[in-house]
Length: 105
Image (cartoon, rainbow, N blue to C red; front, side, top):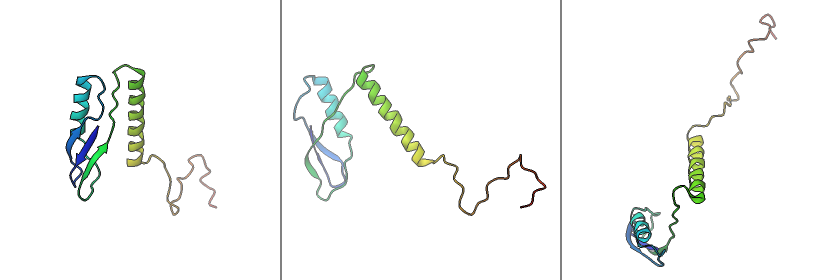
């Protein structure tokens, strides 16, 4: 496929370079490309080449795709809320509940 965009990254035209051999897949790929948003550039872009990959539900490729999606979601969740319990350098660790309370070192 090739796509043209305006200066805001909105797709303005989609062209099919090579058919998949299936009219419905070709139409789905073109329809999907119309929804894309590319990086902003002054003057837009013309003839950006792109490929679209489909995976049949239940196929090995589909399962691999789903796993990649889950991994990306886990990574994004970790970036949003780190789960490490790192105390700032000035913070004191909590007192050990098993320690002898009469020891005042």
